[in-house]
Image (cartoon, rainbow, N blue to C red; front, side):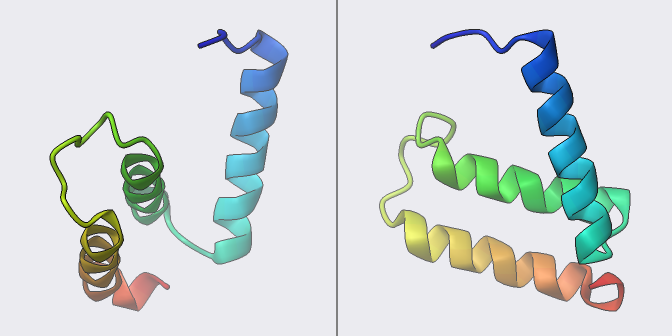
Amino acid sequence: MKELTAKQIGQLLEIAKNTQQGMGLDEIAFITLMRICRDYVDPSRYPFVPDREKWMIERLNKFRIRFFEKI
């Protein structure tokens, strides 16, 4: 996998910041949501999950319950 340049990293951080502000999430809620998405997109992080869609939905439901007041 190719390394990101400093400019690309800066652009990704800016996109993440804009997304966070646009969604109205606080920092912890946003980081948690991004980790859920990252783990779903990258199967190597949890390779033994048999049903990734069900696993993601369960994690998103827990996220919704935990951060209900903030979203």
